[in-house]
Amino acid sequence: MAIKKGIYAASMSIFNEDLSLDADSTILHSERLIKQGLHGAILFGSTGCAQLISSSEKRNLIDKLKDSKEKDHFIIGTGANALNENIELMKHSIKNGINRFLLMPPAYYKYSDDGVFSFYENVIQKVPESRIILYNFEKLCGYKFNVGIIEKLVKNFPEQIVGVKDSTYNLFETLKIPNFLIFPGSETKLLKGLELGNSGIISAICNVTASLARKVYDDFHNKKEQTFNDKLCAVRKVFDNYNLISGLHSFMKFEDEKYGRVLPPLTLLSELQSKELMSRLKELEFFPEKNIAA
Image 1: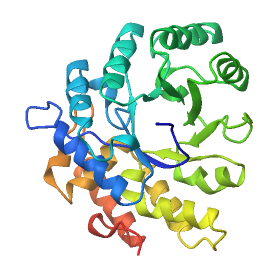
Image 2: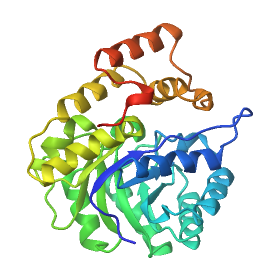
Image 3: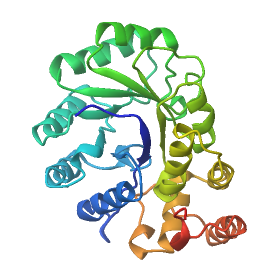
Image 4: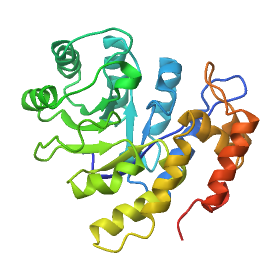
């Protein structure tokens, strides 16, 4: 199934007491977001702690996804540095009926545009059935995509390279490729991006703003007055004061204790930070149990 325009969450991962991945709860969380209005969810993005979760746990969750009624709305983030590990996980996902991926270049090492082209070329040669959203997040992996390398990748692999998630924000205003999906990584860029012809967003904070973000998206396309965008952006700006993963798990813990576990070296917010976060959100009348737009 093709990747569609819309609002996507970089979905959270949920962990057991022994810090193993709770695959069932993680899938249920993502399914709930889709039922709240999201067009889809990315499992094992950076918000989902992909770089900290073992390949065997990822494969186990993917095995369970084949039975989900929302399977066609999921995108898999591989979250791996090794070329062959990415390829193996993608092949395993395709075997389970999901060929949609969010794929970031490897972290840690420094490399050129030519190296990035070679990385994706090798992946596509081994997994030609894949549909790939490039993940542009210089802060995390050390490499920043530019218009030229994306145009080259799309020209050479038009069926496989179908979009970009722009969390570095150097592309969403300038990249113009016909029928190419562009997803900024923040709610604060959603409305401007839509006005520029972008496809929607892929965002961590959509874990808690699903219906708000969908309302903004729908109102834009239905040419209605924007009545929720200011609140959506304000909530995002509050979370931007903290590590997003820590903030989301601390926020969601008020709804369910199982969200209160994160993988080291990540931590929850301190007690003081958590109180500060909740106080700021309360001022916006945004609460764990009332985070759905009326």
